[in-house]
Length: 288
Ligand SMILES: [Zn+2]
Picture 1 (cartoon, protein in one colour):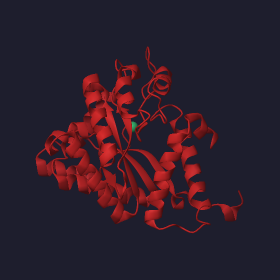
Picture 2 (picture 1 turned 120 degrees about the vertical axis):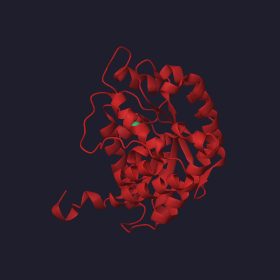
Picture 3 (picture 1 turned 45 degrees about the vertical axis):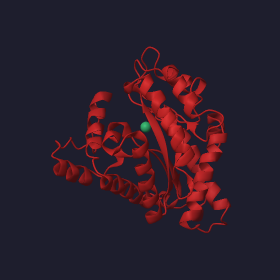
Picture 4 (picture 1 turned 180 degrees about the vertical axis):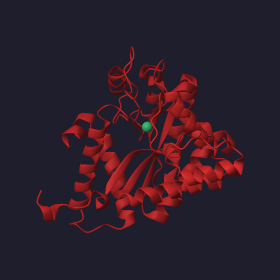
C-alpha cells in the first residue's frame, strides 16, 4: 500500500460484531448509577488483569445491578452508540446480559422489547446501525436456556429496530467448565432452526484449556451448535480482522468512495450480518 493510500484506522468504517452492552458502560455512568441506587461501587477495571474468570464476572454483575429503570437502558444504548461512533464503527451487534435484570422490567420478552426500543432510539440519534444478540447464560442451566431460546425466537419474529429484525442470533455466555456446548444443543436448535432468521453465535474456547474445554469447546460449538461465529476463541482476532476488511470493501465498493447516509450504512450493516450468516467460519478466514 502506498503512502497516499494509507488512512487513519480510526476513520475506516468498522463493524463491531460482538459487544457486551453492560460491560461497555462508561465508568462515570457506573459510578453515578451506583450512587443513585446505593449499590457498592465496583473496582475500576481500566488496565486491570483478573486472576480468574469469576472475579471478572463479579464486576460485570455489578454493572447489571445498576440497570433498574427504563431510562438506564436508554442511556446505556445511547452512550455505547456514541462511544463506538468515535472509533469509526457504523454497525454494532450488541449482546446484553439481560437475564440479570429482566425481572425488573416485566420479564424476558418485555425487557427485550425495551432493549429494541432503546436501540432504535440510539440508532436514530447516532446513525450507528444496531442489532441484538440474545444470549444464554450457561450457569443458569439448560432449562432456562431453552426457555430463553423460545423467547428469543419470538423476539426475532416480532421486534424491529428501524424496520429490521431486532434479534440477530443466539449467544452463549458464562463459565464454560462443566457447561459444555453439547448441553445447549436443544436451545440452539429451537432458536436457530432452518425456519428462523437467527444464527448461532456462542462464546467458546474462551477459557484456558481444561479437560473437555479450550479448543474442544470451540470445535463442539461449530459442530454441535452450528456456530457461524465464535466469540473469544483463540482465532477470534483473525476472524474480526476478516470481518472488518470485508465490511470496508463492502461499503467502499458499493458507494464509489462516497460516505453513505446513516440509514444506508445501517442497511449495509444488516446486509453484512446476512452475508456472514450465509457464510461459514472458514469463508470468513479466507476473506482476510
Ligand atoms: Zn463475549
